[in-house]
Image (cartoon, rainbow, N blue to C red; front, top):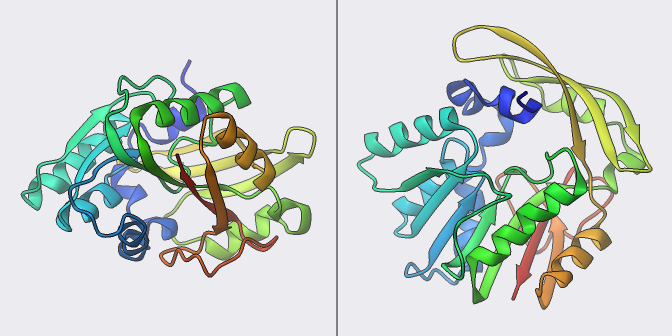
Length: 253
């Protein structure tokens, strides 16, 4: 039986690109470029690349990017977009919990959750971090965003999703939040690319900054910095607060 995140992205490439949270690509890539010192010789892996928006934008700017995702539908959309722009990008179907790469890439990005932290167990989420790390060379940066565990301590997840809701996008309603496991149990309603409507029971793991730091240190990262993740405007000036729905993590080996 398919997990909810597999069902959601089965036939959702066109709709995904219309979601409000996918509209900040250029600004996010500006930040990534700066973090990588504008070194176009670097080989980047984009984990959970979806329809390829970051991979395509970075390739347009001269970088070599490999996009991996679990959803063939999302990858098909990414390939179609790249082909229209005459860009050569490897978009490959892989499970981020079991990547075939070892000491291969100079940098990794995993944005807009990108698989992590959608897995059904903490161990599976950790496998994603572990496989991303394994894919990287010895002196590298790993830049990713994830759900901020500080947010639900002070704010309503439902209110956040209602504020960001856009016509035609997926609609989320949180049923309950388990503070023992830091998981939000919610119902997601969405319309796929063929106009079919679905309702899925989902759950997502929110992480405390200290948890992320410990997990990455256990994988050998020496420097871990965590900031607030502002859509389309990532910045080291944005210190993480309880008002940030997502956190931006920059880890260096």
